Image (cartoon, rainbow, N blue to C red; front, side, top):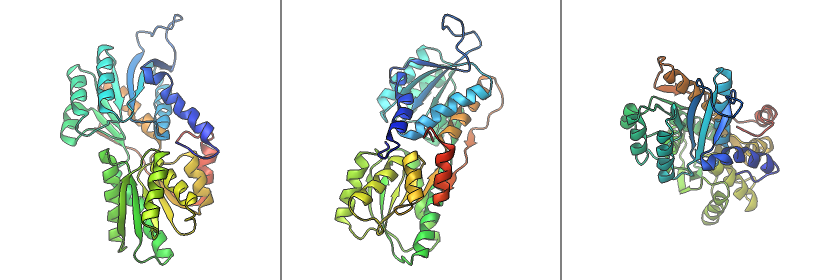
Amino acid sequence: MDLSASRIRRTAAIAVVLGLALTGCAAGSGGSGGSDGSADDDTLKIGAIYLDTQGFYAGVKKGVELGADEAGKKVEFVETNAAADASKESAFIDTLISSQVDAILLSAVSADASVAALRNASSADIPVICYNTCINDDDAQKYVKAYAFGDPVEFGYKTGEAAADYFEANGIDAPQIAVLNCEFVEVCVSRREGFEKALTERGIDYTLVANQEGSDPTESIGVAENILTANPAIDAFYGESGGAAIGAVKAVENKGFTGKTVVFGSDMTADLAKALVDNTILKASIDVSGIAVGKAAIAAAIAVHEGKEQEFTVAVPIDVYTTPDQGTEWLETHPDGIP
């Protein structure tokens, strides 16, 4: 996803998610069990499904492993990356059911297309913990035990507030805004709704001149460049995901729009932190830490497994980054580049 000098570090982070995970192999945490590599009787077997290859999910993986260690639990993780494909997600959940895992952690591919697989897991008495994205509310109440996330409307609202601050400070009365979206998941629709709500409440007379899918960090560059070509008067991009945000930053740079078009982004990675330090294009990035989400998800899974009371909604803090100093601090506190 990263396209700057930190590419090697971020690629390594993603490789952690993709490596053995793509084949559904197990990764140990908090101890490896017996000397022959087999799990002890008290080892939890947890299925973990990552939505795609964005750096956020490398953070989730790290958070899940750290959370298990901090809880003093031996956990055998059986992992995969769904590649935003509901059929791959469903097939792997079938594998996890056959393996009789103790719980499943997932960022659901679809609010509706993922329901059948989660219903099957629930019917097999395997607790499901959603994180970041989930199925529709009605079915989630039936088949999901907990949902760890940062409220997406609030997330988008905070981005909209940062954009409104910028427009007001720079005397931009009627900004033209383009959106690079990830709206194949409902979370991103909610992010945009929050973003627009904040602008409206602040009295910003904005126009959305484009709203196109551009979540992949490489493909999003071309999408954003095409939008700039068709709409050269654009004042700002809103990137609904980390891949969308960095793609917009690179497109503005590539097309020579630096100083004219700015970006308000979502999520934090080493590339976005560096862009915030530079501050000529990226003016804000709103983030829910993947590590924090992973810790919350595994904590919920452990609580459910142990029969403890567990609230359905597990709120994860939303962080706002708007200054170069905050970008520098993020880089210093995330030397491995994992968000």
